[in-house]
Image (cartoon, rainbow, N blue to C red; front, side):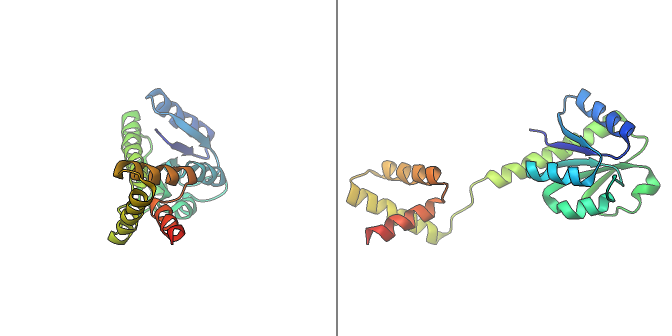
Length: 180
């Protein structure tokens, strides 16, 4: 799932970059002129890859990058002199004129990094031993007091957690609190 946003003030360069990316089979979510539009789009997607020029219609890209922080991966495209001010390790740079293969290759790498970040966010967090003990105690209660087997008690806690959008540990605490 590519989350690519192009934020380039110059209409011709923005269209050219967008066309190159799209023709390579990568979906561009938005092509915008301003930092405000880029911020809105990146925040709505909860991250992504931002391909931008050093200056946008409403702000320098340095402001945009500092505002979005590590919520995006950055690929700055511009002339060498204009990009010399960007000395951050978080900002990848391509100098104009840029070859299509370099542009597409760079975007593919950044899109992979973005996908990994999404995967990390979605990975279940490891439970502390205390949380696991609470869950185990709630399962034991369900087994002994409600006549469930271990698998059914486990499914019950998981389903209740999903239905209510509440962590399993909190469901287990509620069951134990109400059991008293």
